[in-house]
Length: 179
Ligand code: HEC
Image (cartoon, rainbow, N blue to C red; front, side, top):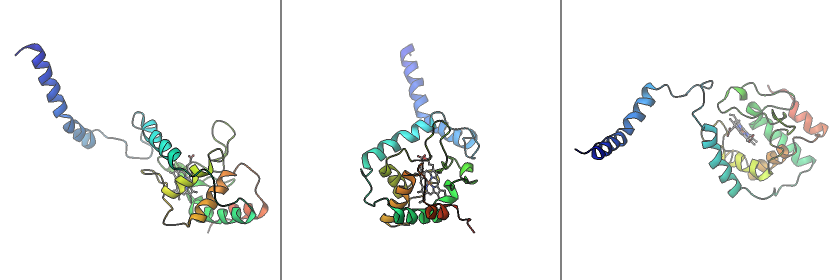
């Protein structure tokens, strides 16, 4: 057999054996499964690119629920019931949220770099999209069958102004000790 033919034969053999490599890796390669394991190469980029694109194309442009004292208080109650366990409350980050992979971002603290609090720099429609649809293969649940549409907007509105001072009533709801 001529040299190029042998090279092609090995190439084809290599391609045919790919499922076997995959099987060997999954069974014996110790792929990351524990929270503290290192990430796959480029894992963050692979996961975040399509998510960002999808949210940009589907998010509503603005909130149909106005931001006022009553709707912020309603959003705070929803937040305490459904979100604080993972995302923390003002002054007290969630212990569990940090022990997830990916971790649950703390929505009342400033980012590591910069002064932005939680997702207050994101369009409110992007937060609403995340609350409604959840984020697959992370701990972030979908609330479309758990909360009403108004409740999803109320909690999204609240997070969009997390960098602003809250009224005493709203602060009280957000800092009441959970039982
Ligand atoms: C069981 C834990 C858990 C609960 C409960 C939960 N989340 Fe999440 N959430 C997560 C995790 C984990 C992520 C990170 C997902 C990722 O990295 O893509 C996340 C991501 C988010 C983000 C995107 C944050 C960012 O920095 O881009 C928002 C906004 C959010 N959650 C809002 C909420 C709201 C509002 C609720 C309640 C209605 C809620 N979450 C309930 C675990 C949770």
